[in-house]
Image (cartoon, rainbow, N blue to C red):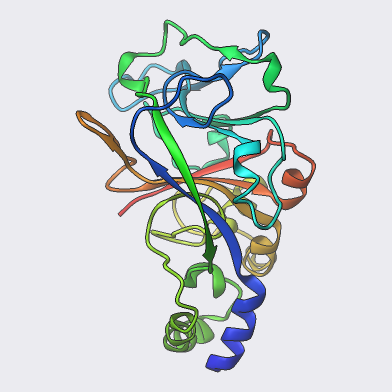
Length: 285
């Protein structure tokens, strides 16, 4: 592909993200956006659990997920330039941080959960389950927002190319993206394109959702299934939330070796405000 061809395609693929700055003490108001602390939930909320062993305990049993963050959708509306998120309510994110599943196994379903609580008036401060250890209860921190343009990284852009095209297009892709003057450094964000550490994650979401285990290689995946994922997954799956490492005084949350976690959702599910089938992937260096 020529530089001009790549630029034309990138213009069509450009999205807006909401970059997140996580630092400082939060204002303790029900329904506000914040990292950590306790979630604001309805009276009938059942804290999610995931049946797993951990690094330190090989007993397989239900374990409470950690509360990661919640976002007030009305606060986000001014930064959601593509109009993808719900306009009201609260989005809450949970992840089982004791086992830190990677998302390459269909059995990882349930290690992460996303909830949309439509009516903030029905929410109140939740309570940690007693089974959730202190190490997996995170300090409450304020989140601020900034709308940012976002381009795909090469793994997403070139997922559908042949092996030969994948190699040959790289240099021109670098030159083309430089002309957009878009900062694509690792950060925490909502929406936009992921900062990829390893491989194309929309491909992984598509294949794992079809029941394929990706912990080894793709050699056992039928060619037509693999080809479909490469060609179409970036049109069907969207990054919902990317969380980088979080630090505060004597607290640090890190995923693997300086990694990130990524919550993905199908476009049709996001449009329908259906967050039941969100898929989480962890990548690290």
